[in-house]
Image (cartoon, rainbow, N blue to C red; front, side, top):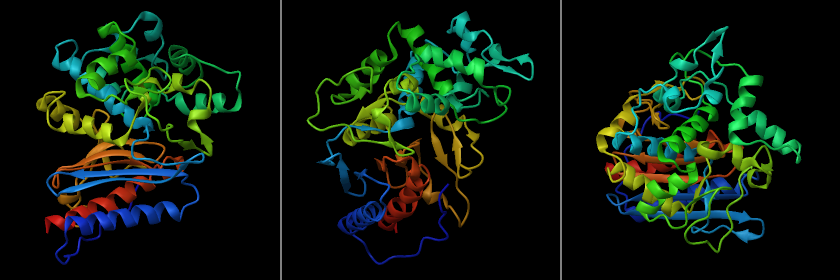
Length: 374
């Protein structure tokens, strides 16, 4: 998905200011040279290295990008869903190995996973949904095209799952193959609603946003923040269509995305996750360690509970480059680099950057941060 490190050469002594300047220059150059990118945002923060950058470039319409601007980071929102499931695990309200039929009604479960004439619906576990190994189909892009092409078309989230049953086929039996699909995260959203007795967005606010003081965070299309931003949501594009301009798109976003906040509040969330302030550190270890090889084209990663873990390969991708986090299809990323205790969060807000954003993070950010470790 992105170019690996051939080597990390020794550098002359660098200061945090030098590194911040190098990262900022690389970011602005990347955006300015690419007409595809209308607006981009990058936050890099490390108390250990004394790095604190919050950069923007471009515009939303005629309005210049702002560090305080709310961003929809696409599937980065899945990590919030996985974290809320993990909060419920810590509270003893579910187990990752529970069959999903324990929490989902018969209407959803009936014929959910029929592969080669065998019904595997009862075999799907919560961990399969989290790891994207249920074998289920992905309804998102098919329904995205329908919504984009036909303004009169609309579909609720539960209806989207039924549409998938009728029109798409599973890819494999549960637990046998990694196949990335928003359908898995719709089902996790339904499980959250069943256990909490709340709408998904209400639960996200009560269990995550409110305790962490994320006052500008909300679920796009479903809720509003405690404090409204004076800045517009940054536009984000899938194949030249502004995602936010498509009527009803939030209903196929749901628990597979929808989280919207300024980068500074995504940082609050990631710090809390890393530091054991929102789930137990032992539970985070499960989220990280219960993982699977993602396969082509994401061969450089293993996938845990909505967590992309960068593989380490001697010389090519040494252990010092290891980081973990979550990725959005519009060139969005939210990662933690343990060695430098750095948080790297941002978005190029365009589908064309779904792979290039990770390449930029690895070669232009992590590689720079490592210079302060030498």
